Length: 245
Image 1 (spheres, rainbow, N blue to C red):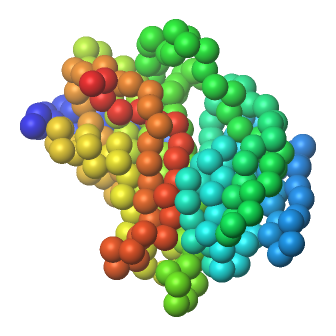
Image 2 (image 1 turned 135 degrees about the horizontal axis):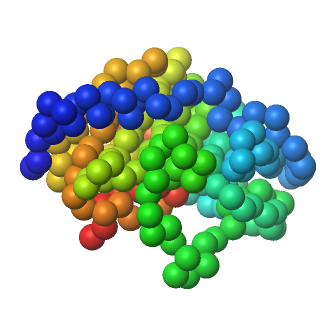
């Protein structure tokens, strides 16, 4: 495991300070698509708060298991309404995507990032202050269920990757403002901590983990599991950065 040098600790602090947090990950949503099926309602929005785009998808399905992969929800035991917002990317489109709840499945018009063309992955990793800085974030807000009671969640997870001198810098930030106590397992962060030693910095409402490594970042789908006392309430996905295998 590689240890961060004192100079690297200073760099890590600068990286943490370089990102400001918005009150809402995807504010001012436009082009809303929405619908209902029985007691279930859904809504899909997109927005362009900066030069890049974001999407926000929400579903209300109290007491039902929901799966909406295109919205980042692999599986969730919904206790009311759950919203998943993802930021930021250059291109998105709206497609009819499967939304499953209980034993039913419908097609919901869903805003989502356009898949990258094979071979068009980013080759460089500019500084975080650059317009093309590589950063992704997911917000998970609403109410899940552990079967006996509602569990209120309010999570914001961000990952960035950049080049600094002869090293690459990864930053993972976990903001947990959930009114109820939940456990969060983020596979990219867990795996990177098993390979490298981070600088750990406090940020408003959470913690930032900064890694400096010679190993090149790799873009890959991240998995986030939300649990209570070891019981899985929801599994979510978004595009993030990890080490190149």
